[in-house]
Image 1 (cartoon, rainbow, N blue to C red):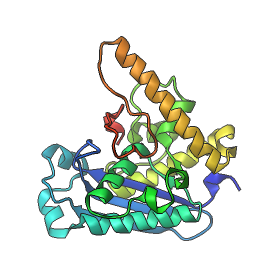
Image 2: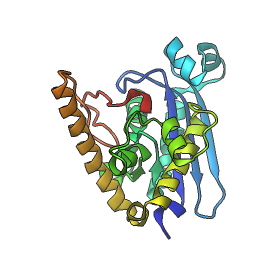
Image 3: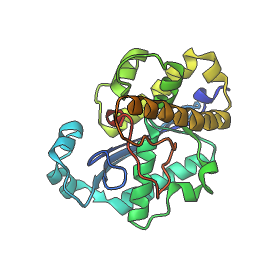
Length: 246
């Protein structure tokens, strides 16, 4: 069976902003789908413990009042999310996340901030991760596609429905459907073995970062582009090449 027809764990978060070191989770969703089995879905509304900026609320529609009234503590949500993803990875079910570098790094930092064992540690280190990222895949296989490459745009390009962009559950399912559509249309991608695909994305993401770094340098922009994937090491600063991809 091809990897994309097996069990897949879709993951997405919405946050207070785009700074992986300081911003916080506001909503999250995990949906374990496919493989001929029943879908298992969880959603979290989180009280981030810090004010949600108006510009973030404009994107995901979660207000401070909503988060304070109905949100669970961050530590509770992060423990539950990390446990669910770790369980999937232990069964060699890959995590599907659009711009995984952002979502998984935010989750990692929230875990460390709140005394929760991070996902990377639960699975025995980086080699225990198994991730598929449609953002990295599209930048590799469609590198000459012009314009932005956020989830909404790529869903339109591949005919994947996305009616509630920036709702974590809708974005998670859209990401897994996008990965399925990409793999079903690309024979090389669809026939890759999952562990090979994960390792390839590590190299592709680093190459993509180097290319963008060179582009910035040529245009006089003194910025560091993070190349680590799918989780930025905790000590490393990061500037994301496509902030709207999150």
